[in-house]
Amino acid sequence: MSETRPVTDETTRASEAAPPDDPLHGFEILVETRPPGLTRRLLTTIRHFGGMFGGGIAAWVRARKAADENHGLVYRSAAAFAFLTRPFLQKDLIDLPFPVQFRRRLEILGPTYIKLGQILSLREDILPTSITEELKNLLDRLPVVPFPRLLEMVTTSLGRPADEMFASVDPRPLGSASIAQIHRAVTRDGDEVILKVVKPGIRVTLIRDAALLKMLGSVLQMLISRYQPKRVIAEFVDYTLKEVDLRREADNAETFQANFTDEDDIVFPKIYRQFSSEDVLCMEFFDGLKPSDPRTRSMSESDRDKLVDLGACAIIRMLYKDGFFHADLHPGNLIVLPGPQAGFIDLGMVGRFNQDLRRTMLYYYYCLVMGDAENAAKYLASVAQPGRGADPKGFRREVEEISRRYSRHASFKDFSLARLVLESVGLAGRFRMYFPVEMVLMVKALVTYEGVGQLLKDDLDVASVSQKHIHKIFIGQFNPFAIAKETLRGAPEMVDALVKAPMLVTEGLRFLEKTTREPYENPLAGMRGTMLAGFSLIGGAILAALGGPWYLAVAMFLFAGIVALRRGE
Image (cartoon, rainbow, N blue to C red; front, side, top):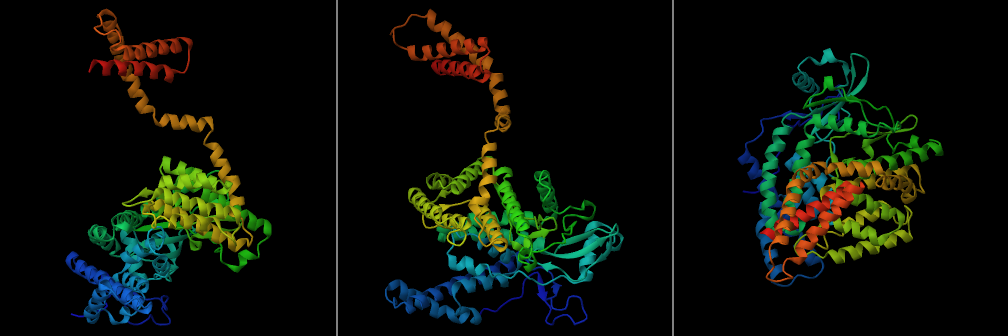
């Protein structure tokens, strides 16, 4: 049976645009249908990924033929396969370049796969540039839920009629993405807000597709392990299932607000919890300008300098101080507010650096802005996970080389800092090194900041702007209070060691007593262990008596006990 283009599984699209007097005129209307079963969805997914495979073979054959490399057994076999499968592939796709085919098929498969493609567009560390660039063209304006249906969903989710909570809701959406759509509204108290509503059936669709994608990832892992499909898909599923619960976005907004309480000019939208739920999010409306708005260029130079500095402060602090950062940062999610202030919106997707990764990335970025190419390469390489056939040393040498090249041309027009990080991470695939998704999201945040900064200042020098903020965070690592806080993280283990210390000390004393009473068959036997235990006990006792560092005294007592126990085995 020849392949046909299906409509998206969870919806059908209206065949005609809304009438001119309808507020949704110009938008494609989303008409709900019953989601298909898992088996049917599996068959649809297999058909399209099979189409991608066949289309990829055909594109490879065309490229080899154009380059006059149409010889050899592999080429002839691929050409025969492409000829035999061509009648079964979609006619309007088969002759397109493979990256275009890939993007188009993800769009046909629907919202889950569009979201997957948007994540894959960031993975320049493992995917070819031709694919990541094409995936950036994925649909970002999807069919909208009709306004009456949207109000019905708000009423059902919040448990009371929408007109009891809101004086008005704009029937024309501000945006419609793969997961949710947003509308402006005014509360009964007169507050201007944004209503974000999860589209009907999306959660079921995502859960169903997540199961299929995980199976697909396991299969692809055996075929193209170089690109780590299983791990990439697992990361995507984890992030997307979190994003579809709008309570998490509300939590994220409040966490950002708490982290930036001392920065009055870096703001995040207030959350109206009484009007929010798992499927509905009500948050403050920011009445400001997009960074790309021509009016931002007409601001005074001092205001533009302040905005650039606020952006550097926010991004560096999120990444390297808090380890909690905006993971879907692009110019559309930044708002220039009066003051000027920098506003951040759309906080559903966040990245987290654990303590060790945050510290390593802090040192990496610090070395970059200070021009220390060797140590920058060392810290970046320590984050990457080597795969089969990896060349960590070669990767480190290449990163060091492009870092040195950057230090000689440290300006946006010649060689930007974001481009340096992007190129460094992009080298990973060649050397079979794999970065966690948080690294890629960090790169996106830096690229966005630098791009927005360039809109405000043509001669932006990111390294110079960053130095003040990164230096402050770096020095803060050595603050006595910060060190004490880090020490307290290990308090439970230390308490456990203290509880066991008396038993270990007692065993050490018993061992000493026993060894001093028993005659030795060999005068040198056991002397090393006995002397170590004895010196440790005596040293610990002296330190304790003199009021020395308690942790060193305990360490010596513990060491003596351990030696004694091992000698008794």
